[in-house]
Figure 1 (tube, helix red, strand yellow):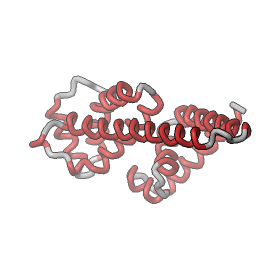
Figure 2 (figure 1 turned 30 degrees about the vertical axis):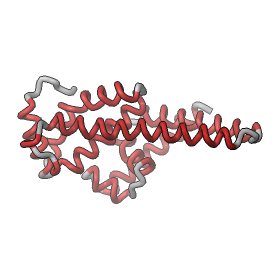
Figure 3 (figure 1 turned 90 degrees about the vertical axis):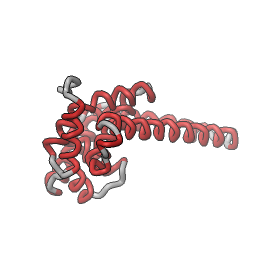
Length: 188
């Protein structure tokens, strides 16, 4: 359970240790700041599922780039929330750009066939079901799948970013894919 009562100096020290590769220290950073990142993302995005994705992306970025943290410039919390704010705003901008493209395409392709519209609706429904099923996976199965499919990482890169043996990552991904398939087929 995240602990908001952890002194900021302690979190700063934990992040500095995490920069040196200390996984236990990163766990402390995660526990201390994950709720704050999620709260910020929820306030901006107003969508819990997207906020979870942003939170996960941000915390992975914190693990990867912890060596860029400079305590003399500010607290660990401020640094992490800055990363979260940037990532969340990027998500909003990407969604707006996508909506703008769709609107332009709609104006240009106003004469498109009914089947194309039906297919687009079906694809959107499938994406929504996939995201719902992904949220139901346990974290050890969900994180490698998200990194591989949404971040475009190879199994080896996923293993390196999670500091987990490649075989373990592959096993978790297989298990996660089986669970996803069962979940998606259950909604058919």
